Image (cartoon, rainbow, N blue to C red; front, side, top):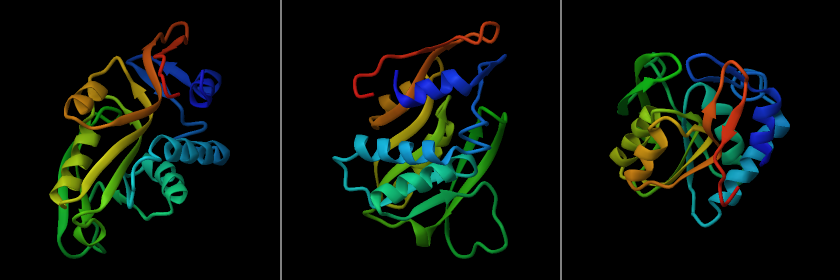
Length: 196
């Protein structure tokens, strides 16, 4: 069992409807020591890639991606879920559907922050149906940049997202892959991974 699986077992809460609450340490309150370890682990897993930018989606991915970007020594940019008055100029836009919130959002990245030829590592906290990742991938490709991989903290292996993104030909590295969860018992079954 790796550090992320151990933390999920210790502090994660399984709820009905295939919901795994990790808000006490990952995506509401953040354990900074854990964030540092996540950053180091993604740096280790993608050490063979020449990453020049880290991309995520607001809001839960921002803190995680910042620690990853720090490890690579590169800028981090996040896709905004709504256009605000202080965003100006041309933008890349993609529509994404949220499993957690059950709604669709347009996400945007200013064209001045994502350039042709950049080598991008996409980071997110969860991978369920893969809609957010597909949206971010389309933004990277619209910019003429290269998706070097996708780093996911927790993948719900019993949902289609991981399979879809991998079948599209992208490298996905997930720190923990949950194959099953039981809301009644709280039991979580993790997929054994070779590189964990």
